[in-house]
Length: 279
Image (cartoon, rainbow, N blue to C red):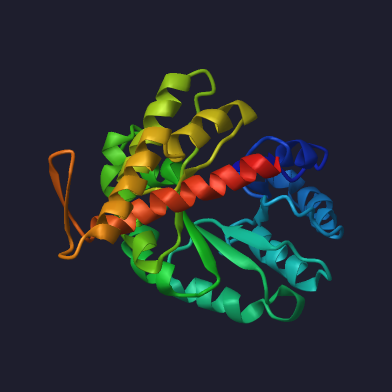
């Protein structure tokens, strides 16, 4: 996922061509307070033209619904004849917030999907309930900068492991995606690769980017390699031939629950292959 500021509609087409799976127009952190009205006015017209069938998700990050700017964002979306297909909501703290927004977005807005940022102590405590609160929620996102400030810690990946783990639990329980915070140091490619790999291993399904040059390393981290995919296919084939639900592969005993992970790996690989062929 890559962000583009709402004040720069000219960057939206460039972001769509960057290789990201999700492009999010940002009305929150990327926009100065004095430019909120301008960003909103420039962003919503971008959705008047039907999107291309390119497999890229498009969304808008609104401001917190606890702020006048967030209420203005939501009101403008409700009043729009061509609302964005998805909205990202920051600083969500309770499942009731999601239920209220779900009730408000009707008519042309009834199809809008939700992406929820967890970045406060209250949100972290209620993450499992928030993830289950509405069937329009497609993903949780980890807001590490705000969370670190709340927890009185630094931004190191290891110090926020507890918070990340709670979100893995919540997202997996709801069967939705979980997207990690962007890596903020554009010159630290090794750090980006390390953080993306660690988040993938923990159970995240993606990571946000703040620059197109970060997308390649992120995609590589979350795309299973050829050896991993081949092993997954071998395991599935062995279980298909097994009569007792147990398989020994390369000297390792495998039980049937491992199939869930293997099917997931193969599904990701097959979808990635289809996307590459269509490109």
